[in-house]
Image (cartoon, rainbow, N blue to C red; front, side, top):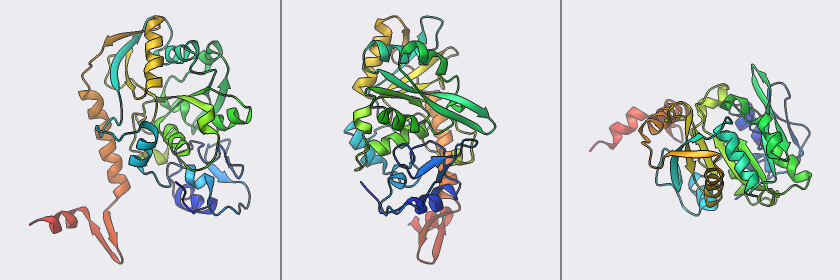
Amino acid sequence: MKVEKSSQDLENEVIYAGLCIHCGSCNAFCPHMDFNKETGEAFVVDECAETVGLCYNSCPRTFFPINKIETGIFGETRKDLAVGVYKNIIQVKSKNKDSILYNLVKAAFEEGIVKHMVLTEPKSKKPPVAYPVVVDDAETAKKYIPDKTMDNAGPLVTGIGKAYLERKKQVGFVGNPCHIRGIAKIYNSDFNTGIRETLSLKIAYACSSGGMTACKYCTDFSGEFSDISYSPWGAPKGEAMLIIRTEVGQKVVDGAVKKKLLEITNDNPDLTEMKKFINKKRKKNFKTLIGDSLIKAKYLELTKEEILDLLKE
């Protein structure tokens, strides 16, 4: 899957249009892109002559064919519009003083699923900017586990590119849904980036949206393209929902339970509150994406109300 558009198109359609989510997908494997160290926003560093830009094709805000990407990653498409593709959803709590998210990372190391992790190091709160950190063991990872989604607000996907250049394999990643969408797009593209040989685990920190202007255009709040989604939304205080989407994700969770790092408090939790939260956010942001005009045909623009009126028998 490649689109014949360049870095100049990325600037016009995403960066200058206020859609850049500062995820770092465009410059993870492209030498012609970089990010502003103070704001996290992407920018073109030179006069790139590529007509089929890796940066444009990696950005989750240029185009995003959900069904194709789901099929490429999971081998199936979603049956649940709110949550996406998944195998299991459970409710858990930590069995020690460490956080649920850290215990997942620790289990991934101990199960041999990862040998390195791309995590986050917050640099500023206003605007929220974090840099990626590549760690090589579970003990070091503890320092960089995010407490909230805004701790991840920065070009973290560039950390995967850094790990690739350092020839690291079995690299895990913890990030927000926007980061995971960028990774999914790179993973499913026709470019030979090396991401498939590098990345072995994706953990999403479910997002409540907000913090940056471009957040209002997001429609993924659970991390739909991860191996595991960690969501405090809909769970009692001190617990979390784990949305397990792949066999790799299941292996990590099983390892955390077996090693008594996590305890399953409900293996069939009520998803009403979580879905209510997600759907409310999705509906609001879909309206922002659509705007006042739902369909444009040549010179004609039709509003939602006009379309509904036309569809009446």
